Length: 615
Ligand code: F6R
Image 1 (cartoon, rainbow, N blue to C red):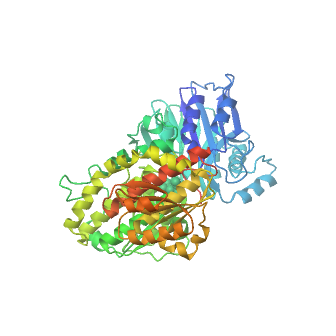
Image 2 (tube, rainbow, N blue to C red):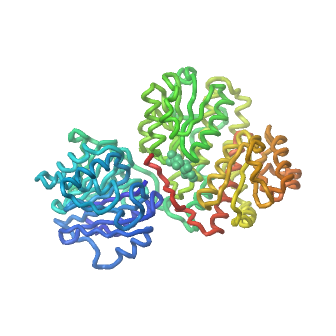
């Protein structure tokens, strides 16, 4: 979590750094700061709060950078607190003598290092693990080593995860960046270079990026950059061209990124389906899936592992893949899988789903499975991310950059990919007939239009949602493929409106959660006309009998459901397997409009960060 940016080039960097941080604010927003060279001295400005506060602090004209040998340098940071509460003194950049740095990650052995530094007489002023790194570098530098040598030796002592942007007052034309375990990209420009935690921060300035691997260090000097590995050996890196545009990372007239991203879903699905379905709808092309027919036939078991919203998508994936392939699937939270000594081996397939491709637990689960000989494929939105690079193959979701902290369009495209994958595997194994697959594929191709249809009900959904913003508890119920969407609906509401919401398998309700139901509890029931329909209706009656308020999301034309519910939202009646995608849109909009009415910070909800790069 936390976002870092850095610049070395011919332009005054205050604005570049600030704009970069704005684009990274989704990664953390409890405090922020920047550091610039001014007349050969590093000037640090930091503050508690969001970047709007930092903007006030840095806006004075006297705070600006001056060049050394025609070169400007600066670094910036937006924080999501791990060690030490949000405060100005814990905000980055941290300074130790001539060394100034920004850090994203967690230094696990910081307490030990801190003791060692204190015993040497260093006086540390923050509670963070990051300041320890600054002092460790300074401690080496003081001994007469060069800036680069000091950084190199200091990082050998660090345990944990870190991406770092580091300056040294005594070497004012050099910026050093290091990556280990948390994301860091290098933006390559003309006579200027950049670092950032994520690509959107730099899209205004370059479309050319280098992806760093763990234990790699970049040394920026005027007009030049050099990448070295942990042994200090220079390595050549490929430059990748990114086709995301600047508009993609702006709000485009919407009040929030989340709303914009909800509206982008039809296009995101089109992009994800593009070139993957044959014209006659008889074949699917998953070119990025590097599994031959023989590989697919040899799969013994499939593990689906992810966190949060991506976990809910994986649950849909499990249901679909098992149905289409009859291969047993196991579903796991990445944070559990990585530590529970999972029984996974050669011949097993692990599917890791991740929007960012940088989630620490998912990455660790991937590594654990690889170590044990399993084949790993990922479903990922960010090309070049750690999960993408470390997987045997990646099926990309083409959601485009997702900025809102609450995941929406990434989820929808993950569900799209799971449908494609399940059909592809089923057709290959012949456990799914072409006859059965064709109408299903046809529905999949028309999905963007169905989603557009549901979007037309937005004013009605908004009206319903706004009635409930004062409620304290919500229940979301669904069965079968609707169950993961009940979980997702509850998660969306919780994270952006801070209202307690429980997602449950409708059949489980009578085993406990029904005790929550009273005349003040809205219950959102997902009741499409699928094979579970009758059962869900019985659950609905049980709620009505206890005076719960029923908001039903069901198939269009279902007048019975409409009559017995207090509120009714309809979705087109299509193949059961694409129904989860159709149910998703109303639950996203309900959460969004409740949060807006409540007045919470929808795009940057409290305590959260978009990319969870720490355990
Ligand atoms: C919720 C949300 C999170 C993420 C989770 C995994 O709206 O966004 O639950 O889904 O942190 O993130 P990725 O998909 O980047 O691995």
